[in-house]
Image (cartoon, rainbow, N blue to C red; front, side, top):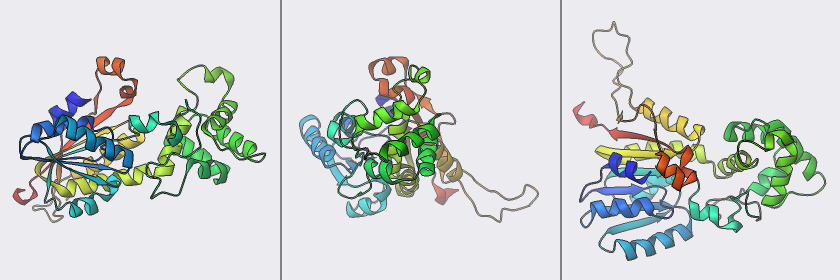
Length: 311
């Protein structure tokens, strides 16, 4: 959704932009072109490979752009922007989910199409919890809850039960081993519809391993704090849990006075902090979905920081 990102963030020369999920730097390069040469492009990623690849891409494609790439999760925005000595940001972008390079590297364990150790950590250097630990040590009830809540998996209880039965004989250690266990937990007739049978389970495990929803809420609230008046915050999510979290935070921060209507003056003191620009999420065009299947579930929400001093 690059076109929609550029349109909604509307970066201008001299502004500060922050891509909180740098990944392959596709969005960042285009944002940098629009704020260069006097602006600043900040990129945040917890993956060393992504940071290295983004640095090379910037030097090759936008050498005139001033940039600062920071290692960490976007839940660390406060610490990272203090470290970078940035006074404020005009455009924030969160493109959630796993970046394509991570999906496409088999040994990272994110893909059900490649055999690899069960890992799924975004930042192996700072996270000791792996998908292997979750699959082999969580009890059946917790496994079912994770698959149901984070994956919207209809057969969560059956899959969790099958995982427990299988691991009693031997640990489940690889992605392909887990795929076979998942298939065994889903009725054969149901496996023939709705895409790959392991898709929802792998999504749920990734969210659990990386504590993604907690990190998302902290990151969004931090971005709002750091945004300059008139600053834009754009979030692209890929499943309903992420989208609901974004909607909840934006809605809460857009609320004004909550006093009873019969009070002559406001006593609560609440003022809107953001102005929500997308009452309903924007979606990818049919053409983009045709070119990139991963875009079919993308949902974009945008908010603008209010000038609270003038409210």
